[in-house]
Length: 182
Image (cartoon, rainbow, N blue to C red):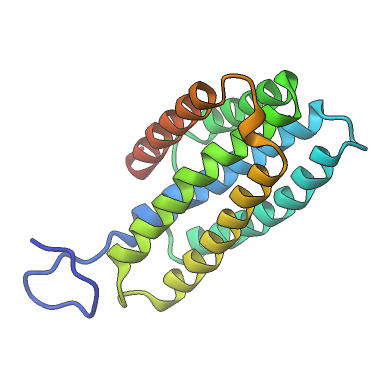
């Protein structure tokens, strides 16, 4: 069965919007925990902390919206949320302990994967769910702004940048795959 954009017709699989909402809510929750971990370590007066605080507020707004969708559409949240709570905070704190550039590299890696993830969802949704597509498109644009912000703030100067971002991106892909189903 193909997954083409556009209205549903026989032979086309409808997008699994419950899975999309579940994984997106989990991802936004994880992002809030990453930023909480970074803010717990970074000097509050540092330029990086100011950037992280602004991005964290946007992630909190994204999470609030997905929480609303979970409730309104009766979507089962991921059972892995306690893991994402601890892992997100640890990732944020760990990268901030390495330094401000590493904290920005973490954002770079996460937002690279989330931008791709959200684009795949938009492609899969097509015109099936205008409300969800609108939210995802808006949040994707904001996540890509975070990516640009992180790179402008020195992400690529982080120690072992390719290794660090590669590992974080791989972990992000695993978290996405698990949160869709569990």
